[in-house]
Amino acid sequence: MTLTTDVKAELVGIRNAPPTVRVAEVTAVLRFAGGLHSIANRVAVEAEVDAELLARRVARDLAEIFGVRPEIAQVQGASGVDGARYAVRVISAGETLARQTGLLDQRRRPVRGLPNRLTTGSREELSGLWRGAFLAAGSLSEPGRSAVLEVICPSSEAAMALVGAAHRLGIAAKAREVRGMPRVVVREGEAIRSLLSLMGAEKTAAAWEEMRQRREVRAGVNRLVNFDDANLRRSAQAAVAACARVERALEILGEDVPDHLRMAGELRLAHRDASLDELGHHADPPLTKDAVAGRIRRLLAMADKRATVDGVPGTESAVPAGIDV
Image (tube, rainbow, N blue to C red; front, side):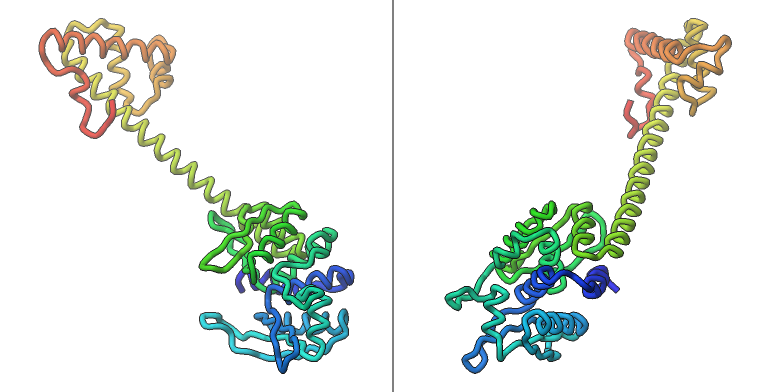
């Protein structure tokens, strides 16, 4: 099962919501999954959904709340849409239902957005509105960089109304248009989890959050591993360059190297992978990290000065190609 299917299966199982919340939910389903049709000069209301259980829930709510008798029919989905589709139709009392749910205004004109009384309702009603919209036309992707909770909308006005409802719930949502189709999207991980919970998909919200945290931990570990690898590469290259320069310095200076500088250089060559701090511990008597670094620095400077006077390549000439000094 996909995450979208999981969410819808959990939402459709919600029972005993207050009447006003049920009205908000079923109105959103009608708005986002259907529309108005004219059949034999009569206004008919129809909603096309992707699950028989959802179709039966919508039909039951319409009958119990508005006293109408919907019919359910299996229909052929649009091209490219997988799975069976189910249409919930109300014909005989379609116009009355359309007025009651706000699909028609008082002048019998189709409403392109959502009824104002729903988008300014209580938090429970706003959650019911979002639940209906998601059941009708929502989708949820897996956590990650491109994670998104999305609802395809029948009009830009409906999209803006849904965005407003989300903002009243404290959820950051945006309206956008993809291939001429208005959509409302929620991308931030915490906002997605909160909206799932507000809609009533508590189990899926918890599972989604666990999956998100697991992926973030894995990504963090990968970043640390890559960071450590880069540091190890830099350290290894620095050690190779330092040893090559010290060898060249001892070669240039020959017997003219002061004993304390020669000792520091030989320490470097004897313990090629050791840090400066570790080199200090190997010295006799022990030296501080700064003392070791200073002696090696003076050794290289003295050798480079002698190389310039003698007209021979300096210590940097000994560093293998491709390694930064």
